[in-house]
Image: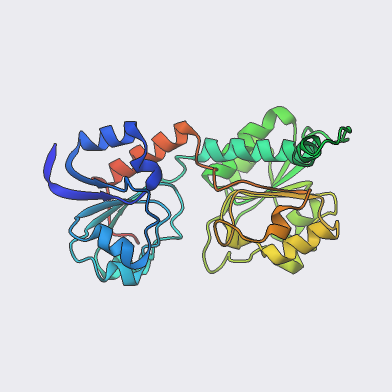
Length: 311
């Protein structure tokens, strides 16, 4: 056991998990957990991390301002797979090391995508709202089976989703800036342009990171390419989609339905969007399966010891 290094755990989810707390304390004696459930950012984050050599972070923003004020911090173990909250250039500037393992929550997210797709195809959210309000009527939905599914981003989660779609005999098309030719061939997948994917797919699902090249990748012009019968699913990052344009498309029935687990600002405040009968919102639960939480937590713990200055 390490009895000298001080570790701070910013993540509320990690701090509330007795299994992860126990496993971390078996490796490090001096650990500060976020037991009060604080939403740490800016100066409050700096105050929490001050005096610690290592940290486990999740959705906390680790930018140049934060890093420049934490000379003692040497290592960040990332809880979760998204890296858009960490300023990599600043990490390099200040010589901070990152421990991160990609794809550890892939099954949790890909199963949620399947749940979203079936829920929207069968009108489950709107049917449930009607039952709760006293209305009893049948909604005619459709199969997931034999649909064309467009996957934007064929990384860890995209590839796992391909596996889950096989029993449904879906036609899968993908868009990715990388070429996974062998995987595409093995799974009978067709790689297409983003524009072709949007025009062909019955269900479009996003699985790409958020950065300057992907921010608002689905703007009003690209949303207009979708079929009026299509369903849009976002379990990646909120700022990938122009939410104002999305709301307009749903209101005008230019898009059949959408299911989002992530938003540009969380929690979202656009009640007009949230209350639409053809829109389903969840509070960023893509990685919140118990099994995924343990996998992400153990990866973060491992990252405290296995790490490097990011490229």
